[in-house]
Length: 325
Image 1: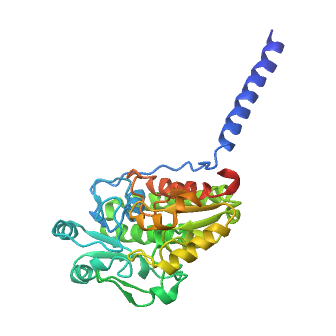
Image 2 (image 1 turned 180 degrees about the vertical axis):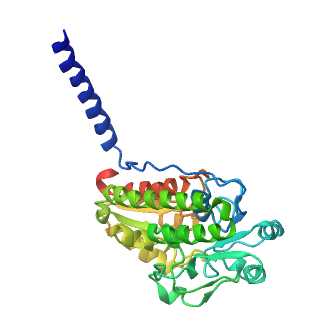
Image 3 (image 1 turned 90 degrees about the horizontal axis):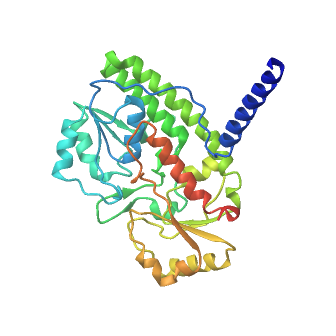
């Protein structure tokens, strides 16, 4: 009996392990981190300009109660107008995190007014940050819009770079450890856990997008340079050269010509912008249309929110790969 029982038990165990491994490897995003995020009690009040920055902050503090965001969901920072309620939020916060005046011009004067007595982190000012330029630098250079926003040549969508996100997380953790020494060990532990998650996600997402260079992708506007660099592919063109201006007839015709010669084009639109103008070229009849959300509008605010946000971006890009359509 004992001789028969041992091989049977061993066989069951081996089958269980095999099934577990197989089910894990079927997932394109394998989580192997054994760290857990801790909660910093009574941490400083943090306000971020946009939601992706909020998700990064939650990963470092371990809780969301003391972290707020200015922009409502599905609202673009390109043309946002500061409200009285926003000013009150800024006054209430201990730490303000924003990308910079190149993106959130509406915050420029307020930041300069409060930075003398408030901790402010401007992502674009972080030393050593990887900064790209827009593809159409002739259009963006010193371009002023009716909202007052001034666009330069620097691509401000820096939060979609995993390396840049790691640098912001490190800067925030350093700031929190200085302001809130009682929770310094928690901030450091959460930082290391978050950095580990970013490294693991970089590997798994590159595997998921191994054939992304075969995709023929058009996007709403020039906002994904950091994803292109990170995953080694090129977006063919964007529907609007400027997120704040309707494209001209000439650009629409050029865009239609590119769509027509593409073998299997995909168009990634954004929920923050009205795209009715593109009905003039009947894009629905030319390409597969789906959405990508660079502002994480529908992502729950949680300690793993940023990773979920990046997963959503990768999932949108995956839909454009011919063999995965």
